[in-house]
Image (cartoon, rainbow, N blue to C red; front, side):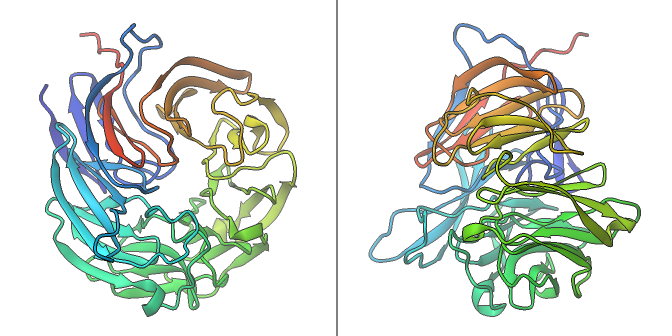
Length: 422
């Protein structure tokens, strides 16, 4: 098989015998919204199941995998050696699983909750790798060699109090800056110069970090960011300055985890103990009001919801995968824990397989890859396959492959792709 790569915006597009598919250069995919314009998959697996291409040993961590231009990236935390504690970035060749480079730096976790390793995925942008460690270390490396371009301790330099479970928000590219949601005293969101790491501007008045990146509002010519902090939902000006609006939403233990989603001028945040909020966005993002809230029946956790054609699909902490109307919050159905097992911290990643339709790939907490179709009418499962151990880390999809990791290994599996008719 011949692979041809072209740089496309901040990622790459892979051209192969099955068609044209996107890489996975940042958390939640090319556009950061859980959509992968991937190949058409077979709805029936062969008796042999999926084919494993390779596996490689890694150390523990929650960092998801990202992929660009034939290279895969993740963060982990090797065992403490001679009293030295480090976080590590590793780069692996997607074709053969060989280590291309690694970069490590000293860190002290002390009593960090769930302290086995870093959380944030590595963001690949214009040939560089950007990351954020659990204790607030930000860095830029050459994506092909791992050579350090710049490195900063944002906790010390920008007065950013670490959240209970460590910094988890992956760097977010926006125009000519890289955004870090680190809850600095001068602003929730810090915009760094991608080439130098110098702080260009800050915005947001929560003074504490949430666990997910901000999103850019797309209404009209909007230059507004939506940011969910532990105490409020904020509309923030691109370029810095005071928040344009905020809606109070103080969440228990600061668990503003799932990245907000934005559809049809409605922003949705889904919390754990405090339920979900739908925010109506108006006037190019400079005005917002609470559309509806649900404290008990719609409660997410870590799993990112999906939305298409006015219907939201969310892994509810109590009832399992739940479909409800974005406009009203009306519940349409629940899967009664079919996708993933119930428990204290249920989790499953959800990714649209194409830009239209209802086909979804999901990696659940048990390490099963599930191919299914979601619609307002219900849940239809096509197949599932065990491809990794128990994990909360987000997989990466690229070409005809899925890359997944747990606390011991990273795996590369081939997806069952339908060949294009000639």
